[in-house]
Length: 421
Image 1 (cartoon, one colour):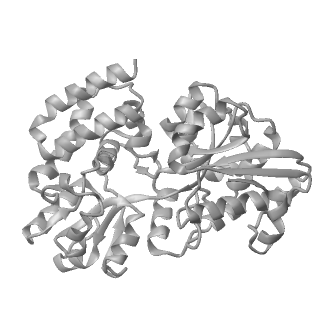
Image 2 (cartoon, helix red, strand yellow):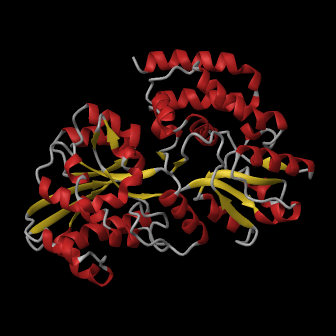
Image 3 (cartoon, rainbow, N blue to C red):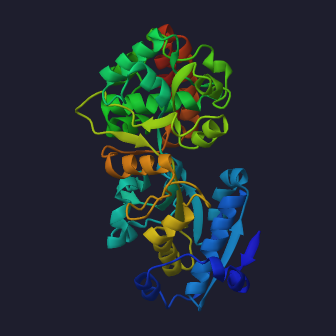
């Protein structure tokens, strides 16, 4: 869909986003055309994107905003061509390694100067995820937390507290097993859920920088530090902590184990909360805690997949594009677009307000105040696509057949040498 938004501003004026007077005034002379291609094609995100474009258009009488909205899955194959031939000014994409092909091809603009703006200080938690080769290549507009969602009523029954250390996690797990339950549900049929466990155990064992070095091919999978990650993970596997036959279930199919009290917790993204509530759990029964410390010498990093805006290197209206990126990262706009009635996710800007939903509030506190190690984008975003696929197959196999670790690591190392050459 293409929209010439000058014609639609009046219809949307009643729901316009609030922007600071200082921001609006500082870019009041923008002119020409700002072309945006967005993959926010699902109904709620589409409404947010159309409103963002219309409101920015309304702020600048001499600027015309053109918006193309394309299918989210189709955009994954179209983006390279779109950036190469008659490129737009602004596009949607993702942070971290998912940026690498377009940075290396010279298709994304280096916007390090934009990150020097004082207004960007409140987005510092995700700066690393937007940084490649020492430069910044985009800005974030939304993200969501991962963590351990657990049955508080079961913890209360067993006299357990939220663990802050690995030793406490293991002790809690043993008490849960002794009660006849599993510690964790998981459905690894589609592999990526095992990636979440690896992300957390590896970053808690070796730190964020090591985790990213592994993701970018700088560390062999046979490195002793990687083996230590698997040794820590195996402690849970050998205890029988995970539900049986998890490789047969999708993440949704594994939910009943938790809903019915047969498992006490799920390491998952916040998007699972709605399904847990729909399954009958009340907020009195359900709670959340940050994945515990394993190595006290490393700061905690968190999985928080981040969606982003970028400026094409061939942009024709760079001034307006940068102004738009400052606009969508402002606390007022991020508060609005991430509200429960819109995206229902987390604003990245630490000065923004978040939904009063219990879990969104908890996640925002963790990501704003206790993710000092860094923000990970999740295994299948931080690792290149081919390495992520091979890697997650190995992670699932390890969870089912931990004695295969040597063969798994050898295969992953062979893949690393081939993929990153």
